[in-house]
Image (cartoon, rainbow, N blue to C red):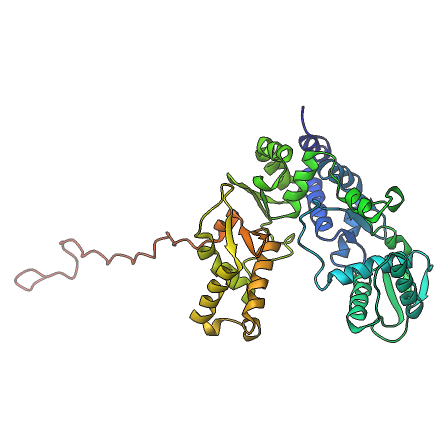
Length: 399
C-alpha cells in the first residue's frame, strides 16, 4: 500500500506546473519558519502568495505532517504541534515562568473584549493563576516573566500597545481576537485537562506523520531514539522520503547507519546556525573531535561527562586565550553548560544524568585534511630547438 507522501507528489504537486510547484515549496518553507504569518511580521510579504496557493498547501501539510493550515487574507496559521516529548527548543528569552504567564495571559484575554487596560489585565492574570493553583507573586522575577509573555504576544501581532507600553505603569492594549483564537495547536473544548490538551496537540495518528515531523523539525533523527514501529517505517522508506522532503521543503537528507541528518542548504529553516561565530559555538565545534574520541555505545552514541567537557573547554581556553570572549570564559562552569545546551539544541547531544550522550552525527563536523593539491607552478618554458632564424649567423659571422 502506498503512503500519502508519494500521493502528494502525484496529485498535489504533480498537477502543478514547475513554477507553481516551486512556489508551493517556497510558501511551505516560509510557513515552517513562521507558523503565524501576518502583514508587518517576518516574511509578511509572502502572505498573498500563501493565500493564492492555500489549497495545495493545506493538502500537502495535512497529508505529509498532519498539520492543520488556516489561511485568511489577514493571516496564515500553521498549527504545527511538533514531534511531542523530547523537545528542547523554545522561544528565545522565554523562561518556563514566562511560558506559564503566557498561558495565563491568553486565558485572561479571552474574556476582555477588544481593548483592556494593562492594570485590569494583570489583575485578571493573577486571578487566573490563583484559579489554576499557581503561585503568582508580585516580585521582580514575576514582573519580568509577565512582561516577556506580553512582548511575545506583541511580536506575534496578537496584542498592540495602543497607548503606553507593557513595561510601564499603565497602558491601553488592543487585542486581535482572530489571531488570539488561532494560537493554540490543540482544541481546549475537546480536552478535559491541561495534560490532555498537550497530549492531544502533540499526537500523531500514524508513524509517517510522526517520523516526518522529526525529520522536518529536527536536524538529526537517530534510529535508536524512535519507537520500534517508527524506526521500521523509516528504514523502509528513508530513500523515498529523501526525495519527498527535497521536493516539498527544499531539505537535503544524509542517510547513515545510525539515522538520518536533514540540512537546509540555504540555512533559512535553521534557527540555530552551526558552526557559528560566537565563543560557545566555536568551542563546541573544536571540542567535538576529542569528545567523540571515546567509547561508543551500541547505538553509536558517545557518553560525555560534565567533568570531561570541562577539561576539554579548559584546554581550548588556555591554548587560545585571545580567541574567546572574556565575558563567555569568565565562568567556566557556565560555559560548559552553554556548550552542552547548544549541542542539545542542535540534536547532537542528549542529556544523560550529569552529562550528555553525543550523537554520531557529530562526526560530520570533524576536521578532515584538505586533499586538494596545491597549485603546481607552471613549468619553465622549454629551450627552443636548434634551427635557423633570420637573426642567426654562421660560424664565419655572416648571415
